[in-house]
Length: 309
Image (tube, rainbow, N blue to C red; front, side, top):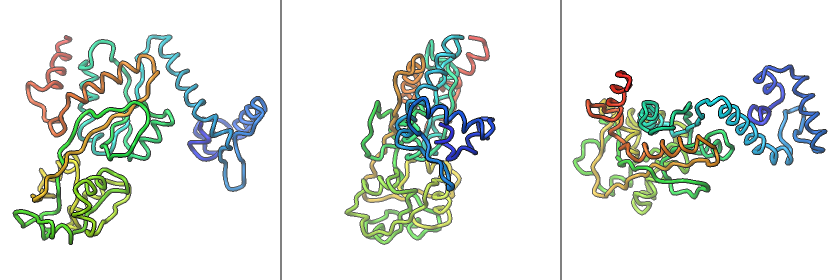
C-alpha cells in the first residue's frame, strides 16, 4: 500500500520507518508466498503489476479490518474518515461534525472523526479505494456506484466583481451573458454543471475560462474583475458579505444544487456513526450553519456539555 501510494520503495520505506533493503526483502517474501510479482521495479521507478493492482484493495480492506478489530477489542471509539469538497468542508461540514461531537447524533455515536478536503476526483477515488468512509459532494449529475443520498441543497448565485461591467445593471439579459466569460473550477465540476444546467442554449457561445483545481483561485480571479461564475451560495457567501463580489440578477431562474453523500458499509460500529452524520446533514440548512444563536443546536449542546449534562 505504501509503495502504491507514494510511488516507490524508497519513499515507502522512509514513510514506514524501514530501511529500504528491509522493505524490499519483505516485498520479495510476499511475492514468493503468492507466487506472483506485485511490483515492477525499473530504473525510472516502481509500479504495481496487474497482480499488485488486484491485490491492493484487499490489502486496504485487510488493514482497515485489523484496525477496527483492535479498536473493538479495547472498546475504543470507532474511527470515521470523512471527506468533503473545499466549500462544504469550510462552510458546512465543520458544524455538523461539531454537533456530532457534542452528542447531537444520539447514543452510541461517539467516534474519532477525521476530515479530509479534496476535489471531486480525489474524494471519489479515495472512497472507492477505502481511504475514506463518507464523502460529501455537490451533485454534478454524474452516475455513481454504492450507497448515496441527497442530504440537502444550496441556492445558486451568479456573481462577479463590483467593477465588472455587468455589476451596474439592474437585470442581466441573455444577450449580455452570451458575451461574458464564465469561470469554472475544472471540467465536470459543479460550476461547470451549473453553467450547463443554466442552459447551454443560453451560454454555448459564451467563452469559458478554466481555473483548474482550486475554487479559491477561481474566487480570487472573480474578485479581480475577470468574468462571472455560477456558484453554490456557500462558495460565495464570505466574498459577498465582504463586498468583494456582488450577486447579479438575471431574467432566468437559477437552479439549486444538491448536496450528495456517498459512503461505505460493513464498517461495524462506524456504520451507526455514518448514519448519524447523514441525519445531522439532512437537518443542517446550508447558509445557516455557523450563524449561532442562543437557541441553535450547537450552542445548546455546548451549554449542556459545560454543565456536565
